[in-house]
Structures are given as structure tokens and as C-alpha cells.
Image (cartoon, rainbow, N blue to C red):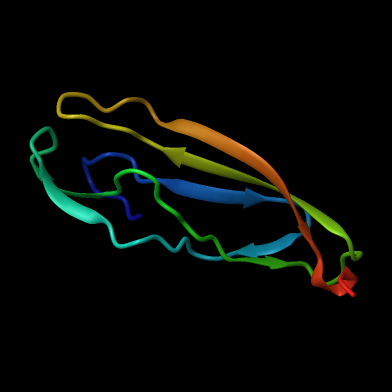
Length: 102
């Protein structure tokens, strides 16, 4: 999901939690690359349901138990004539720290 000069805004994903030490690079499926007449260049994109993986590292000094996270995906949709403003979608979820699993 790299930035293309004068192209559409690429998808970005941020994982937020006070218990995260580091977020890795987003892993995405191989994009479809096709010529876009509006941008007059080849544009990589995804169609339909797409799964992105975001590796994270949890801080080592946290207590065992639930780890609450918020994922925020920012993306832009375009058609043959217009690109809509970027949209932020967020989802909250919990993980269980492995140290607490017996």
C-alpha cells in the first residue's frame, strides 16, 4: 500500500492500544494492477472482501488477561469518474494474553 504520486490515497491501518509496543508493516494480498483512465496511470487496487494482516508486538511488562485494541482503517473508494473522500472505519476487539491461558 504505497503512496502513488497524483494517485488515489492508499489504504492504511493503525492498531491503537496502550499495551502495544510496536506495529509492523501491513501485509496485503497481491493487488490487481490496471490502467485507470481518471488518473491516466496504472493503479494497484483490491476488489471485494480483502484481508490485511497487521503484526503487532505487545509490551512485555503488562498484566496477564484481556488486551483491548482498536483498529482504524483509512481507505478511499473510486469509480471511473470520481474518488470519494477517505473514510475511517474503526473496530474494537480484545485479545487474551497467552500468559493467562492454562
